[in-house]
Figure: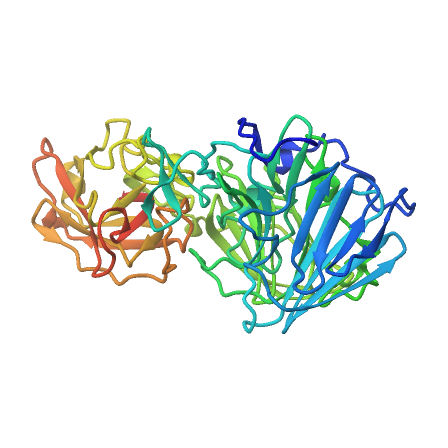
Length: 559
């Protein structure tokens, strides 16, 4: 990209990477080399520390604020837009900034109150390693943003609003003239789905390779903004804590390393991924809160029984200080979680995104905690209960419901969305695909489900269950059967208080509402359909897609 004019507007490809996609990526530069590259070193230009890696990358860090003020790769400066630098949050302001060199590593340390932030550059590499240590809530630090000059990586993807300025919600959701929607929130990825994010052209790739998120919050299925692109410029994010749609309190301590990586157009090296990256060269640099691999432990499980093999299983570890996760092997449920900070953790087994097992485990430094086979009781999986009929399946997500796939990268008003209204007939074969993934008080409340019962079924009381994955403004379902019996208004479960359904996330707290329907509510004529009406109730919310709403996991009528 060297020599590209500032005003270039040609559309180029984007890439958001998953681990599986990058195993064969070429190395961007030597990693952990002890040899010094030609030209490696640093100078103080009076305002900035200027570090040259000797591999085509030159970076500048402000001595006054700790901002990254320049990021030159092979002659082109990629940093900055709108007069803003790359930095923690929206810039820390006055800070104490120091530099130290240790062999082939230059470390720049930034101190702002109780916050510590670090940049490390290595000889012969086109990478910048970053750590952020947030000790408490006295300093706002929820993200690092790499601000990228306009015109270098223009695109028209879901998280780009380059070609639209029409705001349809708040100041961050936009509509194009063709009715499609765009927002920086529409990453379409969960934390477990990606190792890096960024853009590529024929000659340059610019990426953030994420950290292990041990000090982040929300678990493996949390969704957050990862990048944005507009006519003003682009941004790549490492989210340290993002208050939107959060289900957990903020964790404090050191997060990192996360890496700003340049390549010659390909994906970043898999050697930089959080699951494979080792940084023994940083062990003695004095980074606040840094725990080397020797001070960490591992948990390994020999297997998980009682699984539904139609679904992937994930094992998570979490306490108030850290979080980790790993996939369970499809064949037998074996799992291994490495590089864990010592302590006591809650271990959770997820079927899809639905928690189906929980226990406690203790991790010790330098040791492996080996767990015997975990048996998931059938009673822990709602799918195991015998049902007269079921819409969807119990997996903690609205997958398979109408519009579910679109909603992780578009607004509900998007022209590509199928109608949010429409009723459902059990036995039609389209029960799930015809049922909207989201219900709102002001959009499609009062949805009807038609079903028949046998004489024996109609003579008995039954339990109806509605599983949800999140709710907005305390939206929850109240049911009416045949206009003759109406349930009480259920209490609202604990859910995030911020937007969710309109910013690409159904992830909140899974909850099951249960309703005991008396036999007197059913129609005794077996040729007639029973009619279930589902209303969304709440005294909160506004109008339209910001009225009270909820996301559906599954609905069933038990035997």
